[in-house]
Image (cartoon, helix red, strand yellow):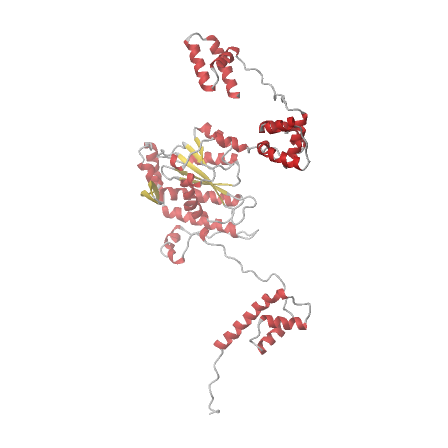
Length: 498
């Protein structure tokens, strides 16, 4: 209605000043936009400014107070259900309450109660519900209105876009626990070429996200035309939407809980981010700075020296899905091969590719990864520095790196310290006595040993300590078996004994 009122204000003056066919065209356009009846539209445009709207229309209760009081009793007896549920319940509830003499109604009041509509029931009980402290309707989140204004784009809606339409997602570096503040990675993946950009976010904040987007737009060698995200509140807000509108970027979103709508960027979350960074927890400005250094090097290595597959077609035959892929190519190669790429961008990419050294980029990535591992795994107040190899040392280590297994420091799991005993040993004072009993009769079970202990020391060793004693007994048996197998042989006979 607010939009219709704005149309009335905008068109009324032009409508009054027009004549003949021009007036009819304005009226036709106004009716088509608003859906008003033609006569009503003519009156509104002639009048000009819309009338001030009155408040809530006063209720026109026509059933009488007896019906209202009976309705309140029935509503309470139904455990305060809503009008739509109370309406079909009224005949059953009336019959049951009248049969038990809980309610006595006249025929007129009874017929009016059975005739009343669900909407009238809700209007009659509105004030009573508020006084009774009933639940209010939950307000929608602020991002709900933003979601409604952002169009949905699914996986099948991309078709063949030109370079510049990106999918975006966040990767959390929280480690095993999501508590507290931790660094997150913003990932952008181009649909046409697979060009991938990553940047760390120190906190989840929309203003910081927009600033990072601006910086990434400067690094991307082609213009950003589209931005497709999920329904996270860090994307669905006025700040990001207004930035996209001001920059001329098409802002779209995927369907909620449908990750396959963003299959392009979801694949890069594992193939690029997790492969580079791993699953450790990173927090603080130091970790964010090292992540930014790692991504600054990795963007060149991934986009210029890492070929990837790209889906060409997908056909479903019954329960099977057949997929056909384009030949593997790097994002730079796809960008150069795309006929829609401008000549200036091609020239700049070729010059940049000629200046890059893949071995040097890989060496810098390994150094940054080792620094990340040191930051994540070091104890508090411990300053450790990663050993920096020269380029010649790193190049020579590539010949034998396969012998060491996994070479990415971030892919190696953190070594766990063996957990020691946390509780005092309940059998510390009687260990020698138990060992003597076991040596005398090795066939005794743990239950028999515990029964002997309980007989000698009443109320000291409860039955719950049986499992502890059985584990102790298992260790002693293993030691005895080892001594029997690996015991030194009998001494050889000496000359005197002969």
